[in-house]
Structures are given as C-alpha cells and as structure tokens.
Image (cartoon, rainbow, N blue to C red):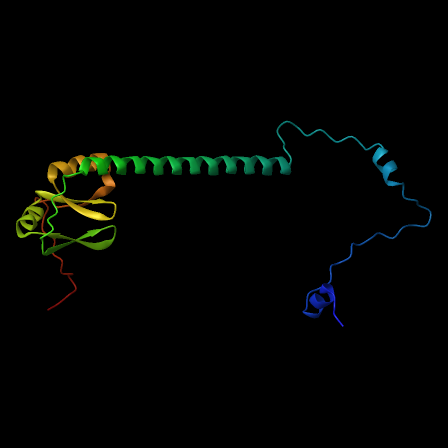
Length: 183
C-alpha cells in the first residue's frame, strides 16, 4: 500500500546507492581479525626530505594563509567603516548651524553627484554665488547643504567624500554639445 521512502525515490528516477566492491578471497588465505590487524607491525614510513612537504600539509598551509588574509581584510574593512562613521559624526557636529539653505528658495540647481543628477533649491543670489564658486554643496545624511567656500574646505578636510558640488570659476567652459551632433 504505502511505499517506503526508498521505493518512492527509486520510482522517481533516483539511482540506488552503489555497493562497495569487494575483492574475492582466495581459498587458502584468511583475514586476520580487526584487533590483530591493528596490532600487526606496519612498515616504517620513509622520512620526507626537509625541502619536500606532502600535499596535505601544503593545502593546510594555503588554507591557513587564505583564512588569515580573509580575517585581515575583514578587519581592515571594519576599521575603514569605523573611521567613516567617526568622520561623518565629526562633520555633522561641524556643520551644525552653518548651512545656508533657504526654505523659501524656488530655483532648482542641478548637479552630478555619485553618478546621478541631484538638485538643491537656491535663491537667485545663492545661484549666482554658487555658479561663481563662492558657495558649495555638502552631502550629509542624504541631504544637500549649501555652505560657503571656507566651510566647504574644512568639511573636505574632515571627510572628502562629502563634497557634492564645488564650482571652479577658473575652469574652461566645456561645450556640452557632442561633436557628432549636427544642427
């Protein structure tokens, strides 16, 4: 009525477990009992030369080195993350009350940061100062803060990755029109 799990698996196409191959015994030979086999003297191992190491030892040494390298890489990664957290906390304390963002600003100033187009809302006077290089944008906790250049420089010294926009007024104007575009 009910098949065993083994019968069901065999019915689904699973192969039975292979049986171990035994050597046929010769008629005159007898196997010693297990206890006697362990007590039988074994031939001594040949000592390996100092320069040679066996394959198992080589794999063990390599595995140990790889493990140590993984542990060291993880330690360095955790140390870098700790340093970034500390720098962000120090930056947040430094920028407290220094943001020039205006709640009444209506002009959106777009810029590239992290491979994406971002925007910050500024007033007309702030837009002129930002484009002239007198102001800059700092990214902190997902927000973009408008700050003066001196504050931007100090923020960059604390945590360089926080600088989202710094306009260089002396930079040559790039032509945004690709050369293969014909009007």
